[in-house]
Amino acid sequence: CLTAGCVVLTYLFANERPLPIDSEQSAVNKPITWNDFKDSFWISPSEHHDFFYVTISRTFYYMGGSVQAFFLYYLRDVIHVDDPEGGVSLLAVLGQGFGAFMTVPVGILSDYLGNGRKPYVFTSCFVLSVCNFLLLFSR
Picture 1 (tube, rainbow, N blue to C red):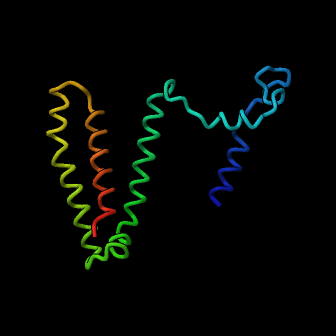
Picture 2: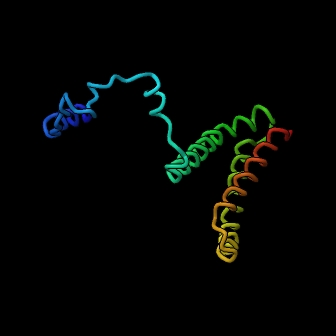
Picture 3: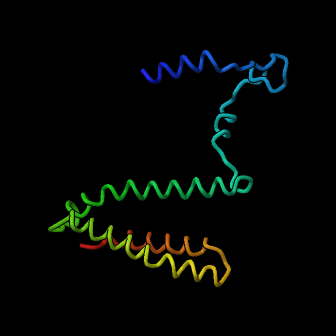
């Protein structure tokens, strides 16, 4: 119902002017090819560095969150932990605790050395990745 109302409001109040047919920028004059379609998904990291960095980091962040949702089943079905809920809780508390504990000293070190925060973010992501990979071999 809400969607239908928004569609009606958009139809009534959004006044768009169509491009003239003889304009060079008109979509009517240039048909869309498969290469145009494919190229529309590419974002140049050199031209849009910040957007590319944020997109990649958010992708990995949400991928990590979705993997974490299955960690309970991994502990229960693969590693056969006696208390998988407690294991997930313990690992979450330890991870958040050490993350919070290390934030201030690493921030001070970063400000003192003046080399920015990126090396520390990349290093912490690498260490976290290695630790998560090593969990595959724990039994």
